[in-house]
Image (cartoon, rainbow, N blue to C red):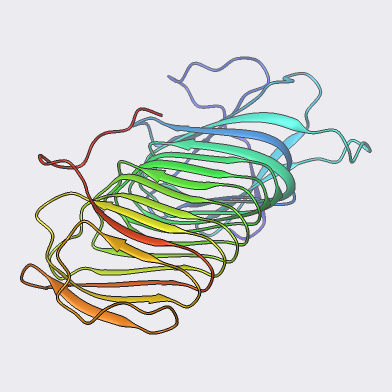
Length: 290
């Protein structure tokens, strides 16, 4: 029923005073809009959503269901500058959307689609299997063990992805983009003024684009390496550990060449930076503990 208020304390699930527990179903989505504070998200196998406020006595909460959408509302207490701390526990298949002007988010173990829109605050993303779309203007994004797909954007802070096989679309204005232990089939990484560092594997038939207007781009590739490359460095330099069969490189001119049998497509472009294509260690991508 549209607009139905749901506040269900479920038998058989342990809850502390002040917790909210609601039964959920496959296809359900939880939304949390205009939130200020810290949100921790974890998963369990029960078909139940649990909301645990840190301040269990004074935080008024409501969950309103409309079809498959559940909206979590933190009621206004008249203090706009005061943030809240919430812990959400949900089934891994559930979808989640969070937005706010000043919110930090940590999500672990979710396989459902995740959307985060934030103006200020860091985002920590772990072990996610669905489609992830996360944007913070004033904050960093640190992600690891992503296996689905991800669109991640920051303003001036770092954007890092580790130990992941997800297709990645990454963008930052002035922050550094750092990719470690990545084995993805498709990557697009773009920054206006930051640097890009990549440590990982290029897959056969994959597609990879790295662009920085004013920063360096450094790739360290795990063998075997088979790719067709286009290098553009308008006022910069290019170096390679791999033999390049092409005419001499000149700043401002494109350089096309093939390594191994080709197969993957690689484009690296910078207007005022250095580009390096380096050989990584044998034996696969390293795992980064974060």
